[in-house]
Amino acid sequence: MEQFKFIDLFCGIGGFHQALADLGGECVYACDIDTDCRKTYERNYGIKPDADITKVDPKDIPEHDVLCGGFPCQAFSKAGKRLGFADSTKGTLFFDIMRIAKYHNPKYMLLENVRNLASHDGGNTWRVIHESIVEVGYNVIDKPVIFSPHYIGIPQHRERVFIMCVRKDIAELPPFYFNPDRVTECSIDLILQNDDEIDDLKKYQLKPEMIEWIDNWNEFIQGIKCDKLPGFPIWADSLCAMEDNHMIREWDTLPKWQQNFIKKNSELWSQNKQFIEKWLEKAKKNPLFFGAKAKLEWQAGETKNPNLWEHIMQIRPSGLRIKPGTYFPALVAITQTSILGKRKRFLTPRECARLQSFPDTFIYDDKPAQAYKQFGNSINVGLVKLFAQYMFGDNETQNKYSYKVQFGNKYRSPSLFDKFDD
Image: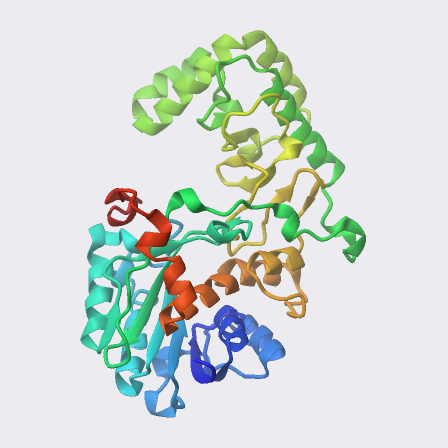
């Protein structure tokens, strides 16, 4: 569509708005419960969003061609309690979308949620959503479409469910296919600022004690002798646990998964006891070496001559997580963000904006903590454009994600699309 009107529900800081405006759309209504997000939205787009969608009368919403929204994900997310529709505050907000859609009957709807929506409650949640959309008069693809920015070269691994809905009298919606073997190569350099472009660079650089702390873990990874780098979490406090009489007495009270990790840590200890004893003595002198920072999760695959400073790192509750230096893990709605090993600093808010495909003209929140949170909650602008074009019937986009182009004559395993693991 060359010209169209859209509404932006659960608008956040405007990921849907940015994408649909770039495609020629005019936003006629927005809403979001978060006060700070509403301020950022108005600052960038000149529209003051409403607050609570549950209190909005559909009659007060202007006519529109497209309804879009990333309805709150906490009820379905792995990070939350996964209550789904049983969540009385967030899970039921999907039905507010249906309430508005039933009244206005827009030509299109484009919705987004976390990957876990696909498998939540054994698939029952998706079935309820699918049936509800069909019931109010829309064609929608039978299976959830799961997609990530890194599939198309945007260096962020962020799998999300996209739901494209076309009113039945407008058009059919062809199946969407994607071949995992066709993932576009990513480079983090696409989104990085040069250090001399960053205002107050010291704010993002690692402090000396943090560099020393990571250096200690780097020494560990380079010094241990094993067939391959451990794929299990390394817990400094559990490396010699099996030699602790107290731990042995408490062993039967521990859950099986914890017993398993402790056993693996103990095996690593027994294979490298002399080295680890010396390393632990040094590591414990660092004031940061406690709690989660005394744990390490190596998730960078097999590599020769490993060097943490060549990778991307995150400080998680489960430990210092190491990822390959090719693309970033998903931005999350907390102030903590990824560490650029080769720059020895954290990602800046502008780099987070680029990871979500916002233009450099986008004005983010003045408070870095709020900016990180808002980008972590946002939808990726580039993916909204892709799925909007597919939904609108763009021939080039629909052809690109057809079975013939993605797979040719290759047999498609049902597991690629028909099985959704947690």
